Image 1 (spheres, rainbow, N blue to C red):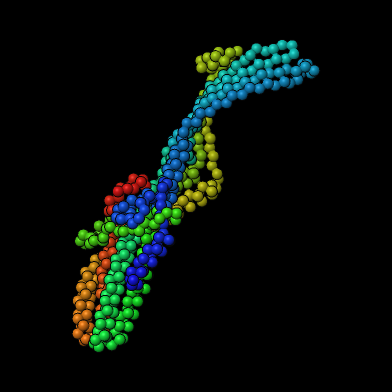
Image 2 (tube, helix red, strand yellow):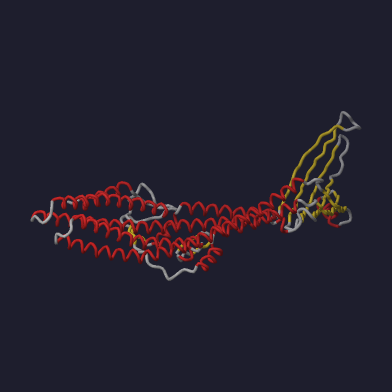
Length: 505
């Protein structure tokens, strides 16, 4: 058995010992045992289902959504009620050695609500039961019922829906920021998946190139040995060929290690690493291909401005900073509040009678007034306002900086794609020339016009050219995916449906 046959078998044993994957619970992908034929879009689907970074971002989005509901709860109607019963026993002035006791009962209920205009309404109904007794007499039972309604309205500080809805707007903006964070995480993750997928494709192709190079070196060893036996070549030719074959055997080990590591990187991105199960060898079923013609830089820039998650987040932060600035400006105003209340009372020896008397409106009271409050120097409010104004300008500057970054990223992405496209043609030409050169050197060696070193150099040049051609196709596919990433439309370009963090093909 040659080293070329022993190396793959050894590496297979190492893989079976070191690698493993299995998933049966939520957040983990389930894969069949044995070799896994994996297409790129299947890899995307597995990552969307089980990648842990995406799972963390989804939980953050759910928490942000819950905080929106919590902020909206500020304007919920509040119902309240209270019931109590008690008794007192106290000495009397007329009879110091005697005492008087009273039974006291209270029942109160009402509703309270705050509106987005700054209006507060409180409606309360109360029934109070009293029965007094002394050593010599007892007063009749009395039930006092009250109905009251109070309205308060802020006119300056705390007035208007903009100020009062600010916590809701901020919570919703934070929710949208979390949504964009999740989309950004999905784009970054899936781009990394594609990058690892093509790297694995290249690593496997590189292994095949090295195997072919080893076969060529071993064939040269046989030819050199034959020529030495018939006296047509010196023994050093055999030694050179054997040395090259040994080097290729070592390179096979490194190529296997590269496949091992890239596979692990891909599996981690897919969320399917579990040490207690058998490891499936991954066979990439897709191959890189050329993209359509030239990409317009202007169109790519426009797409980036409209689609990049970081720009959307920056704009939301500007909006939130503006909302906080508005709240701070409102807080710097004097507090002027109008209030008014109506109060109706009824008294009877029965609860029903007291309520009838209260609702008749024959007895009661009303009150209206104005509350004014103004700090003389108002330094706290003015300092907060200046800080909020600075934060708004900071958010705008950050957005402008991100726009510049987006422009540079897209320009670099378009340039990288064009260079990768040109490289494919150049590497294909180099590979064809290297193949022609090797053929010529082998003929020259057979005729005794060159030595094995010339053939070995030609073999190495052809193997390098073959790898460069494959690497060029892979780099082109990665550069095209990277352009979608920096444009922010990776999900749409790859045909991945996206709805509030739930992705799929």
